[in-house]
Image (cartoon, rainbow, N blue to C red; front, side):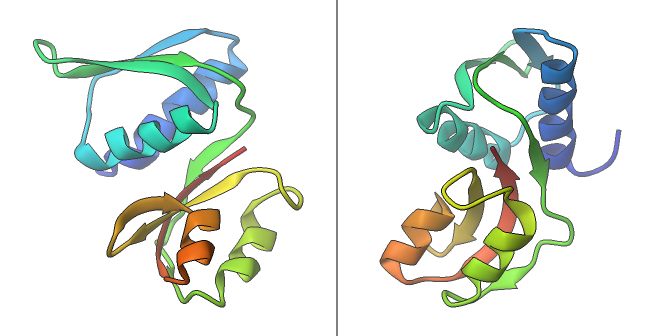
Length: 126
């Protein structure tokens, strides 16, 4: 276990998917990880997630997901640089999502391009 909760959580989800598991329990949670899971649920990468308050863990049901990773180091991108990182991290056009941390909160790269704002790359999944 490293110090990065987001990276650990996404790696656990990816490894569970490769092991053909439907459910996974993540014992370390953070608000950033929960926000990433909200975006992944909207896009169908995970089916649902539940926060267990007593044991401070997340129970996740995995959906249509092939790859999910945290971006290290977290690059700062301007609104016109997002296309460059899409080509770097995503397999093809219109496949996958980059998660960008902006001053308006976490959003996908598509939403950031629509609002014409930049931010910091946090993760990607497809």
